[in-house]
Image 1 (cartoon, rainbow, N blue to C red):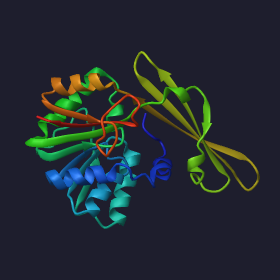
Image 2 (tube, helix red, strand yellow):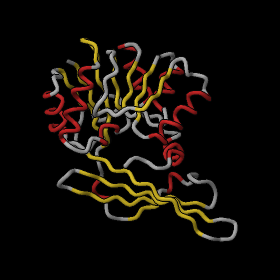
Image 3 (cartoon, rainbow, N blue to C red):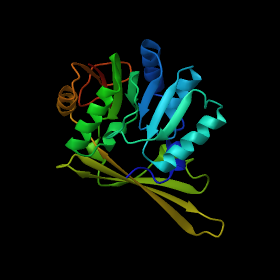
Image 4 (spheres, rainbow, N blue to C red):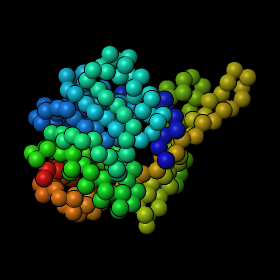
Length: 245
């Protein structure tokens, strides 16, 4: 399940910029239009459009998509960004792209091997012969699982008199992480109100991902651990991939 509250997502990650230069540089190298899978509320698409690149974004969540369209229109970038409903597991746009991206853990919503294989086949089909597929995932921190944690770094989420808590559980057999966010706020009468959002993600091992990409027809695959293209390790913050046919 994806975030039920896109405003919570935006509040949490409104200052996240770590990946933007990475994808902007790829757009500069490969050109546009760029196809973004799992466009969310348009954070990356908006940044690329501000740099002058054309972007077509697919998003499965109607709530996230609606918020993204508002942001694009507010920025007056509708001529460069087209956000539309779409499922990365099954899409046929009738067009190929020099660059296809799946930023910010988008591939973690492919929960089964079948989902992965179908999605990677669709991506390969939509790449130009010399095009690039780029993505980033996070390496999970299992030490912080199964405990309720107050997210101090997001004190502004929900406004004043509010607190955000996270509880993560782990299905090791299916490689599934379930994150439950609890946004607690107190009204003027002193009553506690709670909103809850659930995020389910499937994490990957490096060799599992390489196998899936290879099976889909990608031959030139590189992995990095950070956006500065430093080497990947299981201790790195990310699993970042570049794949070409």
